[in-house]
Length: 232
Image 1: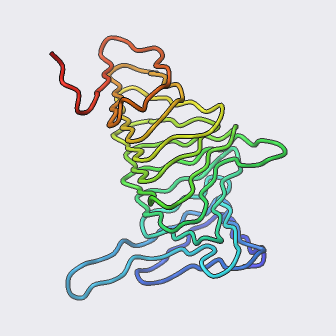
Image 2: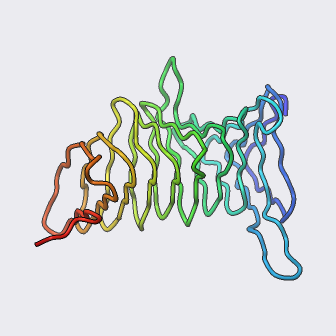
Image 3: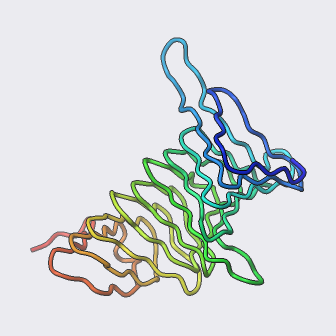
């Protein structure tokens, strides 16, 4: 807390252990490789490792300079912010993100900073998490599920595997890309443009009547899957 910064190196969080950020000065993981632990069921059971931010008081955790978190749970309380604001970005590998706080990528109001957050390997973001992509931010998805909505003023990039955004996509000036061989499933309303950037890419629309965006660069081999609409 109080502005603590850990730079580079490895940080391991054992099962049922907690890294807690709960002060207004916040904390920074700068280029750190964090290895958490998933929950173990059965007997004996072990709870997942936990990173808590802003559960009991206002707090911000910065993920800078390529910081990564693998496995475990990231809990962002209503008073918490997890922020990615550097060009080398950050990544969450197989992490369960829960809570009702904010996960933001380049949400700087003064000078936008090109920033990237990668969600992959089964990472899930809970329906109450406020996920925001700023104008210079990029959210990269590779086998990730976002159960809520995304406020996107930057770029959402479905890089590989199958990813799912269950809620609405809102925000001004944002766009979406689907790379070669990737599948992006959209469950809510969306008015942003979708660009196919490689062959054999798939856009699946669970609610096609509420998709009003443009579709660009559709090529032979790409697929648009319209759920609940029969093809005659």
